Length: 403
Image (cartoon, rainbow, N blue to C red; front, side, top):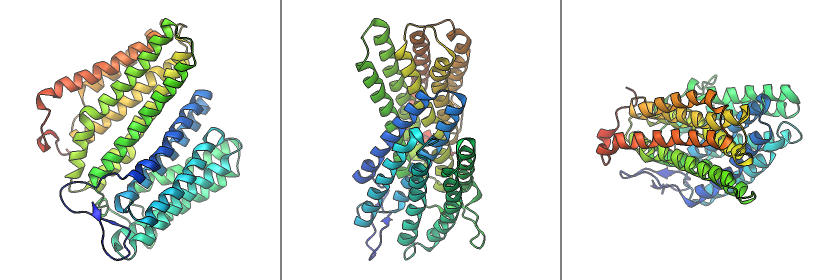
């Protein structure tokens, strides 16, 4: 994307065959979410109960949603312009407040979390209305609808901030449900009709790159936490083994996502006649279990490092096996949408993880973690080897996602 040279425009133009590069200010903005992902994993680690998991899941959905919406608007906005940069810097500050409030969002910092979240969502959309009105009437109408839905959801976020316990959770769940269901409804708004995916002229390569960078953020956070934890422990053989297992597991996750699927999906969405539909399904929604799997797996690594030579308990098994399972489910769906089939390697990997559940009760935590990592490595190598003769293929490599 080149800069839009229309007088006063804050929008990018789309010229040539390539996609708009991710700018340095976008990467700078993303750093806030390294902190957010760390806060989420620490919250789950500290409250690994059914209620704690539900609360962490709700907060993760909110963090993902505010990030994916901001990434979407920078698909249209030109981050090289001063107003857009300033907008991103303001959102960074609000994002830091939101991230800081995560551990006590259901206790004493609910108001801070809700205020930061609503400010980011509604404020960013109002900025988009200002940027779009003179230059893109169709997308301006889209963001009128989006803003209406975000304001409606904001009422529930605000009400939840002043409630407590299960009432807060319920109100915030309603707010998130409104935000998550609205794209599938075309943001239908009285008097404004609804949007179609054809109206969303997103630049697919940019969206794919942005989501890939978020996966790297999540994987990088897990490595940082693992390294910090390992550095504070006595380096006994079992601890060293658990540390190596965690690192290899993160590498295997990277390989599963990036070695084949990410590049193939980027080519597909870049050449799609309806990139808005593919972006909504493959990146907006399906990436959620991928990110969740990385966070849960990082918690499993923490449990394993803490007591590597002790028998596994239920929470360790849930984290150690559940994290990779979530990650594989997300990749399975992602590759189904972007390649047209369910990869057999992923299905077998999920079956192996399921079979490990009863066996893990007879293993040490380090052994359970090692077997889960072996499954991820098997899936990564299997898929890579099965595609090896076809590496280097271009568009012939990716069937239409609608098949």
